[in-house]
Length: 199
Image 1 (tube, rainbow, N blue to C red):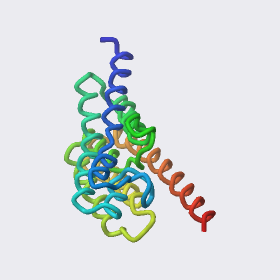
Image 2 (image 1 turned 90 degrees about the vertical axis):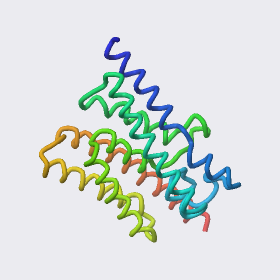
Image 3 (image 1 turned 30 degrees about the vertical axis):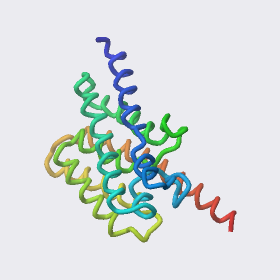
Image 4 (image 1 turned 135 degrees about the horizontal axis):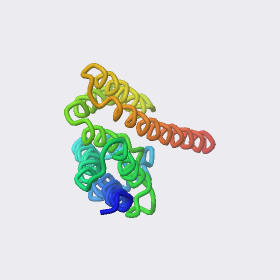
């Protein structure tokens, strides 16, 4: 198959994976509209604070799986090297702007963690564990998810340097992580502005 066509198909498949609205569906099954409470984001952090621990755990696992599957399926289709981050970005974009929820979504922190697992395997899993631990310790901060992703990609970069593995891919992932971080910071700033104006 033509390489460009393969890449386009991988992006379409990855977008659909990313767009699957697990936070919305799981919260709605308990009578809660996740988009109208808390931060208004469809993510594990908002579900944890406003729905419950078990629901948040399910959302976290499913969102991580979306990112990992997007990378794994794209690799099976023949996408490799730094090109793998294009369908990975498509999955994150799907999570941000889901066709199933009128183009609403979450920050993309968990799905970025899934991308790390899909690309880096055990190193990615260890990175995700450390980032999740930071997220738990920083629950009282408004920058909970932001602090976890910053720590996460710093740890990932250090581990790839330490084990002398995937260094080129680590640079590619840092680019993706910065994209997610920038989107999250922009969203947090907008919500804080709206909140201050309504007071």
